[in-house]
Length: 224
Ligand code: BJW
Image 1 (tube, helix red, strand yellow):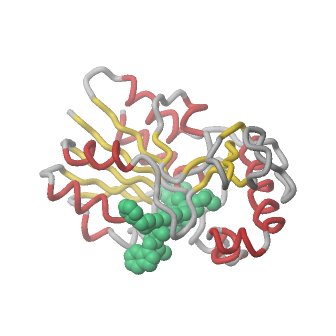
Image 2 (cartoon, rainbow, N blue to C red):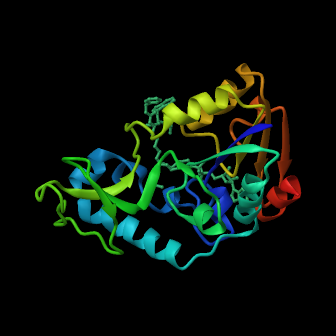
C-alpha cells in the first residue's frame, strides 16, 4: 500500500513548538507579512532573523513526541511505501528516526544564499550582516519557503500523491496552498483520504474520514 502523509505544525505542538493559527499561535503574536515573506525580510532582516533564531533555539531543546515516533515506525514497516511530506521546518521527524523526510517549506536549520542559492548548516544565531561562504557577498537567509515563493520538492510530492492509495493529513489547518489542495489531488487519483487533527481543519469536508484528538494520541492509535 502506498501512503502519502502530510504533516503540519500540529504534530509538533505537544513537543512545545508553537503552531501558527491556533489561539496563542505564532501569527497571533507576529505579523506574517513581516516575518514570512521575502518583502518582510528585505525590509527588516534583523526582525526576521530574531524570529527564526528564537524558533531554532526552541527546536534544539524540544524532543519528538509519540506522533513523530509512530510515523517513523510506520515508515520502517515493509508492508507500506510511505512518502512523508512535512510543512514543518523543524527536524523532529528525523530525530524520531524517519528517513526520508520531504521538507516542502524547507528547514530553518539550513542557511541559504539569496544570491547564489548555496546552502550550509545554519548557525544558531543568524545576523543581517551574515554573507554566503561560497560567493562571499550574497545575503544569508533561512532556507525556508515564504509566501509567494515556490514550495520545494513538488516534482517528488505530486507524483507520489498521484500514485497513492491513501493520503493522510496530520495537524495542518488546510489554509496554506498548495499543501491544502493535496487532498483533492489524492481524491482525483482514487486514493482514500484521512484527516488526523485536534479539531476539524478548514478542509475537513474534503476528506473521506477523520479522527480528532491530540496527535500524540490519535497518530499512534492509527499507526498501531
Ligand atoms: C493539532 C494539535 C495537536 C494543534 N495535535 N493537531 C489565495 C488562494 C489560494 C492560495 C493563495 C491565495 N493567495 C496567496 C496564495 C498562495 C499562498 C497561500 O496559500 N496563502 C493562503 C494564506 C491563502 N501560498 C504560497 O504563497 C505558497 N507558495 C505558492 O503558492 O507558490 C506558487 C506555486 C504553487 C504551486 C506550484 C508552484 C508554485 C508558499 C507558502 C509558504 C508557507 N510558509 C510558511 C512559513 C514557513 C517557514 C516557517 O515555518 O516559518 O509555512 S507559513 C506557515 O503556514 C508555515 C506552515 O508550514 C504553513 C502551514 O501551517 P500549518 O502547519 O497548517 O499550521 P497551522 O498553525 O495553520 O495549523 C495547525 C493545525 O494543527 C490546526 O489545524 C490545529 O487544529 C492543529 N493542532 N495542536 C493535532 N496537539
